Length: 143
Image 1: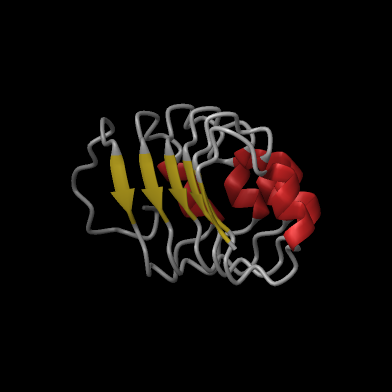
Image 2: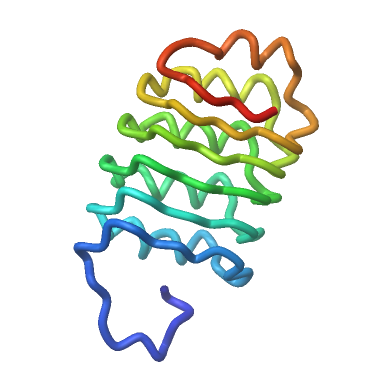
């Protein structure tokens, strides 16, 4: 949002935001998005510059139910610790986040409302870790 000088109006009551393929969005941009506290769905497909530090900024989004971080190349297990604060999260897409490991999934296991998890193409995640986090209400896991 900080990279959008042409922006004239921003609806802070927004519930859905998809900035997929905005390859220039950085952690600084996430600080602005965190002000949209009523967001329920947030999509960052292919926003490769987002890092662990940027995910820390999302903690005020306590109503967030769906988060897509596909192909976040700088996201590591440390970043997943910040996602743990999103208690309403029901759907999490981490596909292609190739720095995520089994250790990072332990933070995800504490998301008690999580129903959908995609860790496909997360090459450092093992089947053993997936077995450990499978529990209700988790209904769908893509590995």
